[in-house]
Amino acid sequence: MTPETADRATFTSIETSSAADWQLIAKEFGDFARQLPDRILTHLKLLDGDFGGFPIDRLTHCLQTATRAHRDGRDEEYVVCALLHDMGDVLATYNHPDVAAALIKPFVPEAYHWMVAHHGIFQGYYFFHHLGMDRDMREQFRDSPHYALTEEFCAKYDSPAFDPAAETLPLAYFEPMLRRVFAQPRNSIYRAALD
Image (tube, rainbow, N blue to C red; front, side, top):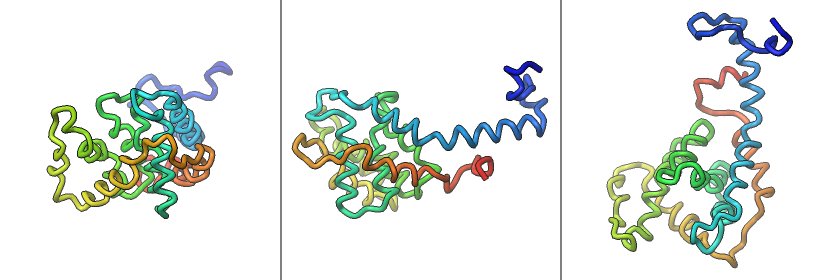
């Protein structure tokens, strides 16, 4: 074994892996997982300056949404969801809510995960009709216990967060909240690797 491979597993197929291999991988996984907030912050910064035709750039929209939720007294998990709700715009042009929803799922209550996963359709109530689409697409989810929460998120925080003159707290303000929310997953099959 060379010094370059001393800190790597030795298997070529997971089927032939050993407990020693997985102890090494688990240590590396824990270190990598603890850096997740840094990677999220880096990704959010990709939204800076990307207007996409909107009155404000995508990062400012996320910051305004989080600012509105924070000023309204929402808990940190909700505020972080508001901050991250559109972070998928860069990578998932046609399904951006799925990216943020997948990212937050291990760290927030199911109701907040559902809210982020479905906010795109609920937000459509305010503009789908301008594009010849059905603005009432959200009605298919009327029986969900999270319908009212998601409807309120869009009405109070997401929809009005496109105002160049609105209060917009900086990303640094939300960083400690993000780090606390992402400090430990509440529901993940990989949680034991961090313990």
